[in-house]
Length: 245
Image 1 (spheres, one colour):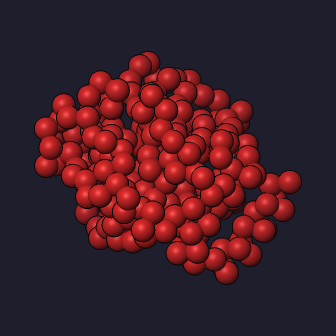
Image 2 (spheres, rainbow, N blue to C red):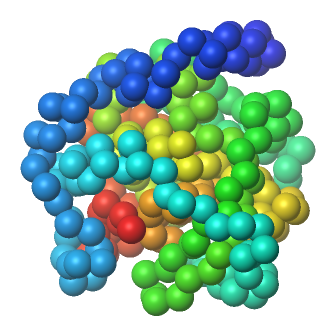
């Protein structure tokens, strides 16, 4: 079943431009501008709750602007990427792991790590920035989240993406940021398999969001038409929702 879905996806990928994909997910330039111009965490106090609708212009800008990457020689030592956990590190058997993609999609999916590894591998060397004030240049490798969303065939009303983690952490993004070409579901770090402490078997990785937006141990991705009252673990404690850099 997944092999056939993958073959169909690869055919679609050759025909479908990024602009067409955004339009297919219900986006247009005017639609994204409805919320007006928002600010990011770097220009607002950390305790201010950010109205998700005000992130729409930011989302549109991000969706069309790749972030410059670093050369492999710039990768910093492993210890530069600090380990922060929401709860105890979950124990996940990689052989039994499945990523569920559901919600406002026409083709719900359950994918194993082997399934994910049949999709095109994308590698990037970017700066991971933490809201606590530190940063590290890291190489991430994995599957573009946009590839997975395209496979799941989002419905026109899909606007937001929720991420559920094995340790109970939860997070939400706007769809445009999720479709950014440098937003990955990563299973590699610095050219090696991802460690459990860093979120194995699968985590979010992107240069366009602060670290608290980049969930580790992701087991479920759910597309929705509107944000639920629970927007994200740290956001529900007062952090900015958009979390862009």
